[in-house]
Length: 371
Ligand SMILES: *Cc1c(COP(=O)(O)O)cnc(C)c1O
Image (cartoon, rainbow, N blue to C red; front, side):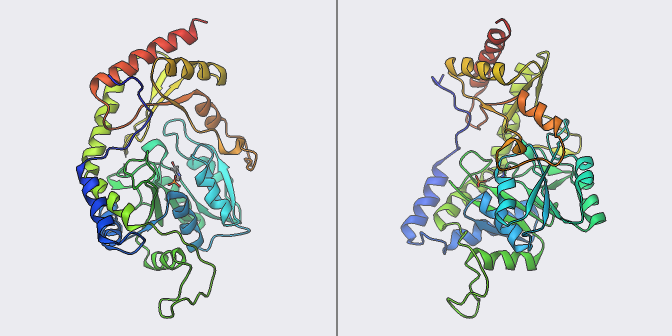
């Protein structure tokens, strides 16, 4: 038994070492090189989209997608209040306003009813987030988008391989954006990807990613672009991870079933949702305790840490951050955020590890409640 069980760690095998070594040895260390196109083509095939474009990380991927869609100052983009702050930040980078709305308690994802209430003449786009690996209710969201002529950008940073009614996330809106940070479903160290069927959007994003350089005239730039490229080294790691993704997702589902066995029957405790139309990939193991408030949750996490088990609080509502505010209250996001923690969630956990973690969880819950 390891002495301290972290919340997350990447799964690295000899395949990853071999591919990255090959990329380094080849001399193609920057953003040209064969692994880039290979990673993009295979990731597009995995998601079921015509195109995929690598980026330097998920945040730049979101910013690039928004910029390529022409979203900017004066526009509003509707985004859930419960998400990693990058979703809202990417919108703010363009000069547009993130409109933070509430979530549904049964998915933790953006509430279609809340989207509808937030639509104004300035609304240009909706950015659903497939939170903790569970897809948002995309039929309802796409229905609203077509009714009001809005663009849908999926923030799929936490949900590689998750399915909505049999289709993979990243293929369900105008475009999808993924992250390959070290704790995501697959990693490239840092990295991101935009997926889309829209050829014009793909070509525009590709140009903006490289300082909007003219394809016919080198070092000629007609508009403001970025350097948001991934390196061939990162893509080599990504190709190795992508070859293993089915196994990695299967393992996550197995680990979640162990958590369900151990903790699923505890009164006042909720684990990850699984809507009937969803195939979730369980990015992080989620546990909400009805009795938690900010102070008791902090005591619980400290107790768990003393017992050698790492955990994380759920994201705070973005509207609580000093640079943002919500147009209307988001009670569900607030109550879920307060009640939730994430438990160790990585594919090298064994059955014995999960049993050990859950025993410590039960002891720490007792400790906090008995005070
Ligand atoms: C991780 C994450 C991002 C940002 O990805 P980075 O690669 O870390 O920039 C964006 N949105 C969500 C929901 C995320 O979890």
